[in-house]
Length: 154
Image (cartoon, rainbow, N blue to C red; front, top):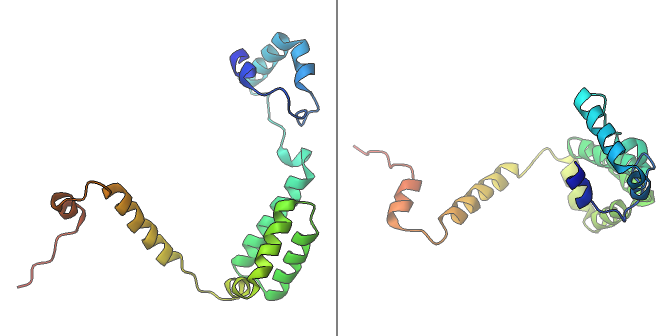
């Protein structure tokens, strides 16, 4: 554990427990032994990120709402979501909402229509994977091994 601690950056913000690296270093060996004992005994529980970061909570709520919209929402709910995302303090969400606005009609259709191109994308992904695995080795023998046998026509 001491080696792992030495490899960590010490110039970051305090942990979610408020302890800085400098504070932890003051009694390093005792702190590491205490941590190891709590881990071994099962008493150690990493504090949830949600408890320390309101931005994380807001971002997760927005992401989960968007997922729900894409699985069957309404145009009104999409407009509310876009408004909430633009009002959030999270730069990435504000930028994503601006980008969605640029092609709003396509996003509305994705929310409202039951159709998906997932099957097509899956087949394209499979073909690309086959192409990558065969790149530089494409000979007749490998091609035969990859192809299913033709049915006998009698």
